[in-house]
Length: 549
Picture 1 (tube, rainbow, N blue to C red):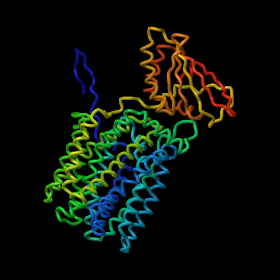
Picture 2: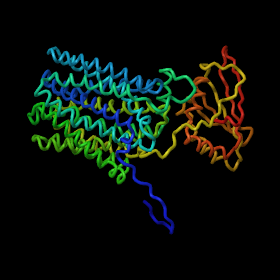
Picture 3: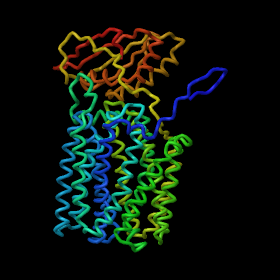
Picture 4: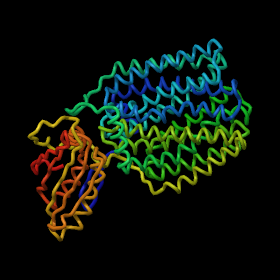
């Protein structure tokens, strides 16, 4: 395909296929197994929500099922993300899935023998949620290992489709299974469905082994570094802010839907399954038109449109007395949900370098489920005190306000920044035996700047602050010599010598562009490394200009 401009013929790149990720067999196998497992999970979710309405009909208790499912993800996702970055993701996921299968089978046994109580139901929901918390960051962070970079957006969107296919099928099957086989059937199916993921992960072998020559980070160090990275990654923070503004209010229809089915419409488990299935069906339909919507609106307007659709859905559910209106509301909820979730997920994926991807995704998952947990508890309490319609209307109003309050936080639409490692920092030359844990380490970079370039240099060098801090520095500053005009010294500290060596492997090609711009002011800045020595002595280690960070 081509176009003519200025008398010349120029190639127009074809629009990437929405299903490009399925050209890769590893992605297809893992995706299929995940869908099967998620069908079982949604059958469990539908059955546990319905079982709680039978054991305890109070709206707050019913909403607590959603809280018990989401709270562990809020609590454990960040440590899980750190583990995903420092251990073998594939083996880690296999172990987690085996543990999940054991918990799911135990809960099924209690229901089968009629021994399940409200507290036990909440406990097992929490335990299964904890397993999902440990698996979620690792599952999301293996996506770039399953597809090449150009198909990442397709893979993320396809994962959203898979989740919503299972959401469409699972609850409906759960309702049918409860009606025909009894309440314990979905619990047993959930346990068996995990075997599909275990088999797929045992079959899959990553094409690219872990890169880097340094030992993996310790868990606590990885947590601290990951949190520091998130704090200084402004694009990631923007996505997290937009996520809170959506998920906190969208949680209302997830938490209260069992009561809408049972109390407002006087339906049974089949109706509840149909309503959840309608959400999934709407999401599948939304995924089919998502590329066109994204091209027409861009990520920010698409998230705003999805939030408006969610607010309208909440109003419709607040008014619903008929099955048809409730189904229409759930279809709209599904379309809106996939539009927002896919946009936010792509934005997170494209702003994270590989070395911190698991931790960054864990931040997103934590915010996602933390907002869902807090929202579910709040809307359940409001529904218990003031009624279901008031809770739905309040959540709709809050979602509308959230659009205005967070509009200045912009999302990323694609991989327009190269975050692959540049490896352009050579290993420092040292003349002492520096222990890996020895530190802290003070790095100084001395520049000689022409007086006419002073303001431009200061404006450029301050952009290095975020880079240094994102990659592990905990202090940064730039100083001007009062007695020697044109002499500037940039300083930053890292916790240990090993952590500084890790900085060398974390610098991206995007970072390199900025650093080369600063080198235009001084082609050979002088770098030194000052390592805190034992017994209070400081050993000063100069480096050559070619080793400038």
